[in-house]
Amino acid sequence: MNTKTKDLVLTAMMTSVICVLSPVSIPIGPVPVSLATLAILLTIYILGMKKALAAILLYLLIGLAGVPVFSGYSAGPAKLLGPTGGYLIGYIPMAAIAGYIIDRYYKNRIISAAGMILATAVLYAIGTAWLSYSASMGFKEALMAGVIPFIPLDLVKIAIAAILGPVIKQRLEKAGQVSVSESSSQN
Image: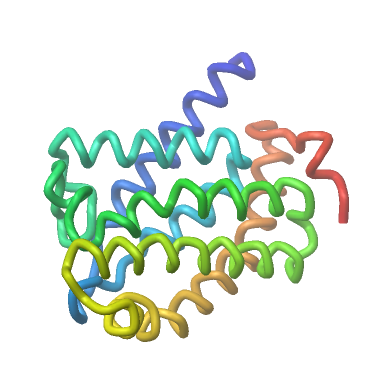
């Protein structure tokens, strides 16, 4: 299989992983707990920033088209433009920031985790601003509903991704399924 075909297959597979894990959620308020961020962080490790961004955009388009891949098995423009839509759109800059750092330092779990924390903070900011606006909440109220309850679990997801991401990537490299880009070779 040539490299372009492998890249397409891996991108489609990781899009599928995001689509399967993201709807699994626990409603705890206006913003549910889901496995989306874990799936996205692992996708970044496996695919690298550019292909992970493609997978995330594809995931968002699939949900926009009406396939129930968003939290709680929801879909459509109303979900993307609704109160939690900012968190969905926030996956794009989250992947760009975390991906930029992970692509360069994926073997260094501390730097990668710091990049994921920074990226998650950007996701929180975008999602909270949109939640505040679209649900007519004060920013502090939106922060309490959409960020504070999620911090401990998101730190666990980041730790899981920092531990499993490099292992999965190295195994895929050994199997010849992915290659390390020149920018990923730093420690």
